[in-house]
Amino acid sequence: MYNTFYPPKARSPITELAQQIEPDDTMFDVINGGALPDAPNKCTIGAGEDSETVLYKQKDGNTLSDVTRGFEPSGSQKTWPEGTKVARVLTAQDIAVLQETLDEHLTDYEEPHEYEDVSDDPDYEGVKYRLVVEKGEAFLEVTES
Image 1 (cartoon, one colour):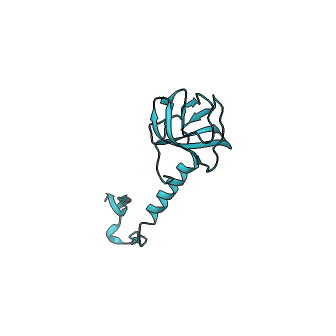
Image 2 (cartoon, rainbow, N blue to C red):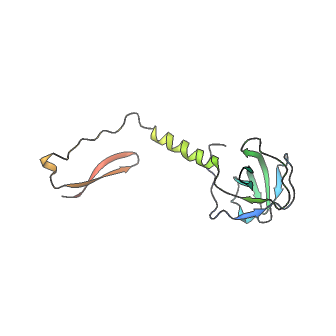
Image 3 (cartoon, rainbow, N blue to C red):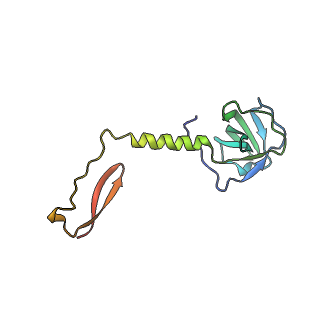
């Protein structure tokens, strides 16, 4: 689950806990469930260094259930008072998944692409071209001759 992309929520609207929650709670209510994306997804309780990101597998109105507490950072679950801010914000896990995906894409190629330098070739004099990459394949496309 850690390598999963979870959809963001535009503008990261903020809601609040409807009641106090304890570290072992796996279900809780927020004031405005519409502020959070549909399940499965995650949300962050609190802010900054004093925060906890949870994974919720179900959302019914204002109720989040089947919740994994301390999803990020691991072991961060604690008691949170009623009224604590909750939002779907960019997290380290989001960035880690993007980096991992990019690294996998870049290492998909067994050999680096090699290109022939045609800049001094008389057959290409006056030809303008651009480098195009489509579906992982690179080629030169003539734009003007």
